[in-house]
Image 1 (cartoon, rainbow, N blue to C red):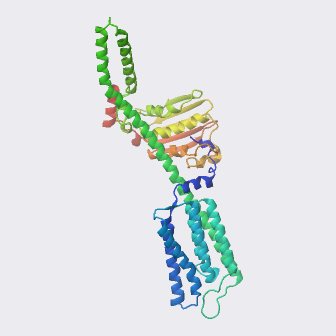
Image 2 (image 1 turned 90 degrees about the vertical axis):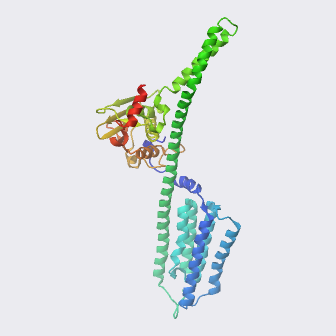
Length: 446
């Protein structure tokens, strides 16, 4: 688990988000469809300007880049299946062609004077949402070069009467607005898409962690059920072996029967240990136990011999009875593991409850949380421990705790050490007094 004490800046965001983007490549069909829309818009604009407005246009020259896009789409659809996924490099080349094709059309129709010149930003914006940062920067540089060229080199804007001319100062303003707009829009789109990819990937990791916890719970249930089912035939074997040992005590097989009898007893002991807790015979998700026992079960796998461990029970009234929830077990386990990692001598879990609220606080005597990262605790993929894990431990713990209805807070203790406090409304966790709780308590007392 990654320490929240060491969470600060994102761990090489470009690298991690590149991997996230590469995990979900774009379908060729999507970009082909977008190009068909672009071709339809270009053809419609050409018809309106040439036929409806009757502006003079170099029709043949303009038709060439539009026809090239149509031909390329037809070839791609004929050669590749609709489900083909593009690599980042392939998608980058695809979008680079779109930039150059639009730049050619703008060159023939007035350059940056053309009111549709802003469309040259579209391929770069698409790149920012689906491709790695390096390719997006490359496409942005290509678009910037085209914008700069079109600001000084282009055919006249189609116009009736005197040629349409714009003061050079205003042209510089258009160039600056497109260049700065591209930087702003692309940066914004990339950050938003990157955050979405980070959260998606982190939630997938959380689901995997919870699935592993549920698999372990199911394995424990299966082991308990197997022990229960094997108990009866093993008891029968033990009786038969005992009777044979008594009847053949003086025979040559007496020693073999004694070994068989001892091994049968050993098997019974093993099965007894597997099924010593009757509540484990039930589905773990619906078994019920005391709050202190739940905390002990969550902490046990993460204890260290060299670090002291203590649970303090300071609640008022009857102890809450709670379901054995994989979310709570895994979330608490992550927090205890983190505390054990940075404690100097001792980790203390304080359990408190009253009529309205249940509080579990995990504290240690370590260095505590650094002040600059307290606000960012619980965010995914934030760690300064390069090359060690993904920085998801605290995020997973926080997500699972919140999924169970709790609220989690991170604090520095007065003096020395860190504390993580988890609060649940008592009505969410405590099922004491219900038929399920009474049945589980009765089963434990049998």
